[in-house]
Image 1 (tube, rainbow, N blue to C red):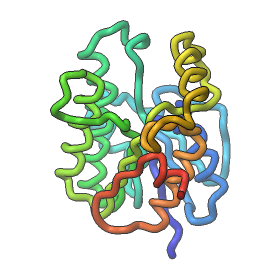
Image 2: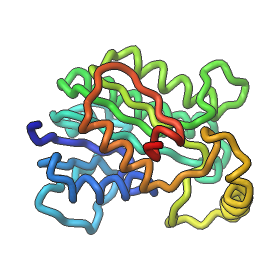
Image 3: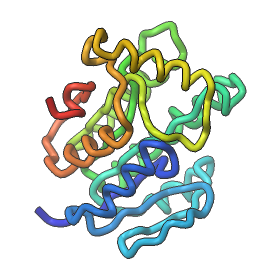
Length: 217
């Protein structure tokens, strides 16, 4: 297989940063381009760091460039947007959807996204509905390969320490053995690895990955 050029949206977050690390160490990828709002300190021969204003659609489209696969790990929290659903949507809907739209026009063939186990466009719950809507819109662009990671609770060492998250983490881990496989907590590094495997296999069509598929069991 020829080496691929990958683009990461959300490379500074928990899953995105681990994905970036793994891609840089994978010989199947010759170039890894990250679109970020602020400069990052990481340097690597394969890494292209591109500063972008995601609200400037013309610049966003231009700086996305060309390549083979787009990895989208972008996401915010209610706390970060102070409960503002409009701001939440700008990040969790507009950025992934615009990246997919621009990427399709630029000739990218694969799109991989971290969604949620609860994604459902018909849900009355804002978060679940939003994730479902994102999946449906991106699916309408008809990428050759569209891979949707649907984790439940994501584990890992976050830069931001959220008290509520610590409580949920402890709770989930304590009862993990009782949960259906789709609801088991999963390490961010495992999600990143699953995304890379999917990109390398490049199976045509749309594919959903829950816990079992992501851990490879």
